[in-house]
Structure formats: C-alpha cells, structure tokens
Length: 99
Image 1 (cartoon, rainbow, N blue to C red):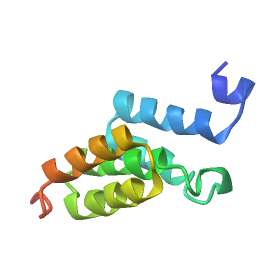
Image 2: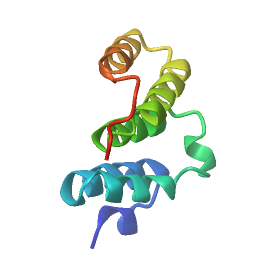
Image 3: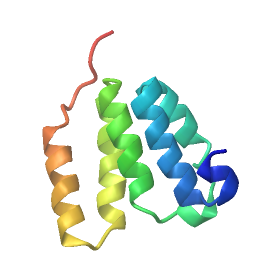
C-alpha cells in the first residue's frame, strides 16, 4: 500500500509525482503533478511550480519552465530557496528545444 493511501495529503501526492517523474519519466511526472494544480493547499506552495519547472526543463519546454521557476521564486521568502531558484532560472535556456 502506498503512503498516499495511508496518509493522503497534498504534500504526499506532490512527492509521489516527483517519484513518478523519476521512475517513469518527466512527462509522466508532469501528468501526475498537473492533477494537483487546483489543490487549494498548494496554491501558494513554491515547490509545486518549482517541481513543474524542473520537469518542463527535462522535457525541453524551456519557456514554460522559466515561467514556473519565476512563479516559484515569487512565492518563497527563504533566501536559500531564492538563490537555488535563481540559479535554475539562469541555467534554463530561453528557447525551447527542437523536437
């Protein structure tokens, strides 16, 4: 039995989406994550757009990734998190990867 069945919470489901992305690829992780988009408990939680940004980078969808990373950056007041997100943003290309 998975932890999201034992102790369901938006954070647990977010962590599960990260695990899905690692195990099944970024598209699957993004699909799992998108199910959380309307979750009120995560509306102002910076890790939701941060994780989306990371998965979008892995998919080569850099413009969308940059938007998500900027959203995450605006949501956190933690200086270390801001530094990490700024570094990710600076490393993310401006143009999408050609398919």
